[in-house]
Amino acid sequence: TSGPQDTSKVLKSTSFILLTISYTLQGYVGYIFVSWFYIYLVQERHFGLLSGAWMSSLPWILSIISIPLGGYISDRLSSGKSGPRWGARIVPITGMALSGILISIGAHIESAIVAAITLAFATAFVLCVEGPFWAMMMNISGRNSGKAGGIMNMGSNIGGLISPTLTPLIASYIGWENALHVAAVLSIIAAILWLGIKSDANNKPD
Image (cartoon, rainbow, N blue to C red; front, side, top):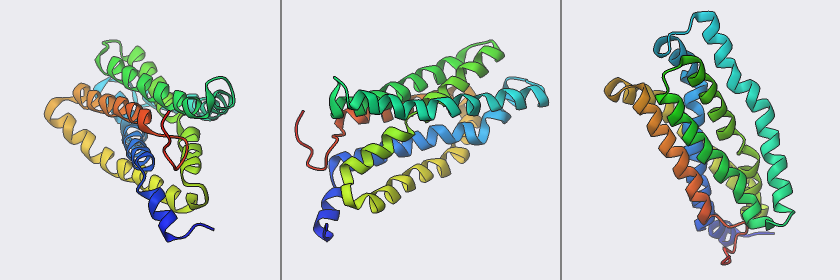
C-alpha cells in the first residue's frame, strides 16, 4: 500500500496540480450556465419567460449526450493509435477549446436564438470532459485516488462558488458580452493546461 510520502508525491506532482487547476477553471465556466443562463437569456437576450425556460434546458439535453460520449471517445482514443497519453488529452483539449470559442461567438452574435444555441453547445462541450478528468485523476493518483479525487473536485466546487458571484459582477462593470469572453479565455486556458498533464504519476517525458 502507498504510504504518506507516496501520497504527498502524487498530490504535489505537476500533473495533478495542473489537472486540479484545469478542473477548477472548467467548474467556473460550467457553473455560469448552471446559475445564470436562464437569467442571461431573459434579461440580456430578451427571451420570454417560457421560451427562455425552454432554451435554457437545451444545454442539459445536449449534455446528456455529450458527457458519456466524451468518456467513450476518450477511452477509444486512449486504447487506439493515439496512445494513452495523447488519447487522454484530445477530448479535454478539444472540448474546452471549442467551448471557449463558442462562448465568445455566442456572446458577440446578434441573433438571440443563434446565441442561445451556440452557448448551449458550448455548455455541452465544456461538460463532455468530465469522464476524461476523472480517468486522468485515477491514472495519476493510483491508490491515492480517494484523496486526489476529493481535492480535484474541491477545485471544481471553488470554481463553481466563485463563478455565480464574479460573473454578474464583471458583467455589471464591462457588460455580459465581456463577462462571457472572460469565461471563454478561462476555458481555453483550462484546455492548454492539459498539454502539461501526463497520464502517470512519474511524469515521464513524451
